[in-house]
Image (tube, rainbow, N blue to C red; front, side, top):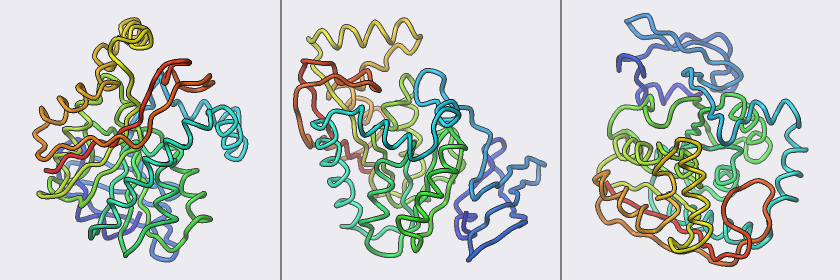
Length: 294
């Protein structure tokens, strides 16, 4: 982490101010240390990542388990081989759309919710204009640790802060972030996606926007029936609504966003995919980017 973001942070337990103890620092980045509040809540900084004690999802994207089986390069190779080309192309279109939006405005702080293995974050590092700091968040400490190492190779000049935390209760003060982005990360929060959208709005500055991508399908499709049954069986009822344009728009409206725009960045027919439940093989799908202004 970098010291500048201390002004943005609050204790996730008591909402109190945090103080910083530095154990190891390199080129202005805090590698090891501790954040503490007056109520004696302590949060460790290790390997450049602030750990606010979040726990990974068991149902999707359990990165600690994945890294026990593969190293970072093996994971990249496995994912690139398992995701269909049409899905990669459409995903790249969505990333470009979001990055263009970022670069068309001044941002002191850009927050990436549910960074995962950095599908969007890595591209932002390559294309970012200006002097923005990036804040990467994820439930997984381990995935952020590896994201940091990768980022140092891609663009070591950009200041990036890594925070392992719960996206439904982030350790940021209200009205503190210039732009919030996510590449299918909020959708992957499943039944907590609506809470993630509301939390993104809370931390955004007024007049600023959330840009978030989703894979959508048709409500009358067999795939949607399968998805709805999957959500019911796994006790994440309601998560299926975020695979529909109407469900996304409703969630943004209920979160209180103004000027909601949902842009389709590509559409195709689903092919066999080893990693994702959606899109469904042989059925129509699209990727959209939802923008909501606070």
